[in-house]
Length: 267
Image 1 (spheres, rainbow, N blue to C red):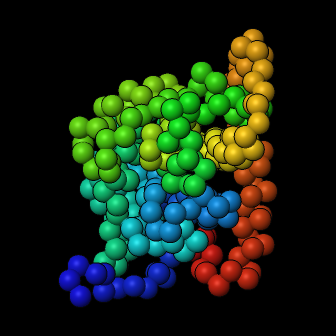
Image 2: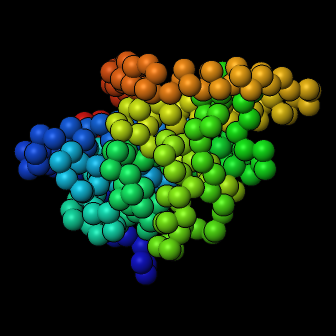
């Protein structure tokens, strides 16, 4: 069957005893994040990527290219370096998506403050990414991003290594990036923070699409109010984002696991 993978199974013996405690915890968190992206309607079948740096190393964890987000487990994640070389993966013919490390590897290399990077192709995210106006400050949720979001022009599928510098430059110091005509990207010092930012950015895009579809005059607060609100919603102005709700989200996943039919993320 040509290049079609010949090993389609999605369950492997746990590697918990074969990796450090830090790596195993990173694997648990990342597998949970993939499940959460799916649970909140932000998955795109087997596509897109979330990466997480293994603490104390330059190595990254990423999904195998061929698994649904709801199938991903701690053991199924591949370990790569910033250039996309696979250092370890389960015994399978599935590899990784090249675009994953072109985009993510660039940010991880350029931003040592970033531990996690999330990229999505959602309906609302792609819609706003196709608008010349970008993310509008129509809701309190979207005001968080005023002056704190970058935009990257579309250059085709992200497989060209030369695009890395431009992605990094367009992201700048921010934790959110609209990839024009493509999708959304967020990053963070922790995975829960990056997930929180993506959730809020996605919510902002959904609200914007709905509001614009109503074909009525849109209300935008004053520049002073927008600046004040954006400042108050930055991670440094309050407790780090994602921390408070993370364990609640894990409890939600555990409760839903009972009837999912998929292997639990923690194996």
